[in-house]
Image 1 (tube, rainbow, N blue to C red):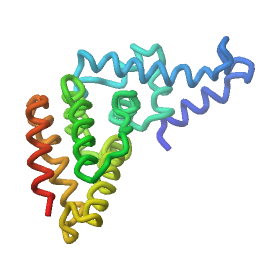
Image 2: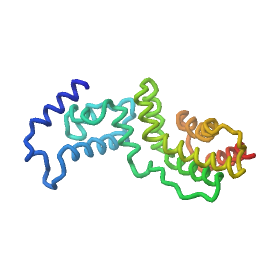
Image 3: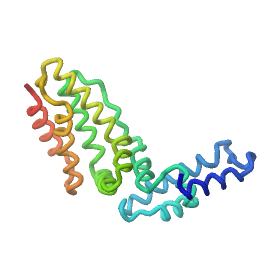
Image 4: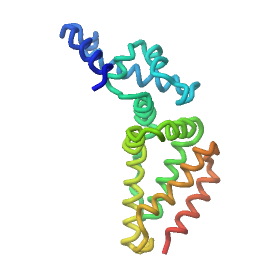
Length: 209
């Protein structure tokens, strides 16, 4: 446990129980936590992930740095939760009629999520996470894993029903599906409808028997 964590816990422990709740009855700590996430999202509209600092988030949220370190070990973790907890990034998909349609709706969903400023922020998150294995694990958990699981289900289903080659390696196929989109955002290129449609057509053809 870091010194920041110990300091924060001691400060919280010293607050009388009667003072821990705000007027609405919600724990004051939860209110601060929401303020931190909201402040992070607002700052990211005009500040890059690289230039964003814990100090700036704390000032914007009206809290101390120790309050931030109570919940998150580093800046990357705060940013990822602030960004990927937004409704726009939820990976809720309709039930497809077949595996190819499943892949199509997943690509279309991901393309919409990564268009415009969201794509810029996610690209910066990916870059920020590279030197830190803990941050990479967080990126997989909060963003990539749901998409990976959905694609794995579609591809494995297609292998069983004859849409795709049964000997195809699922992990490699997922890399083929996600690779063009991830490359597009980290290279600073726009993800538009034309690119999305062409990517879907090429990918479904390459995966087919």
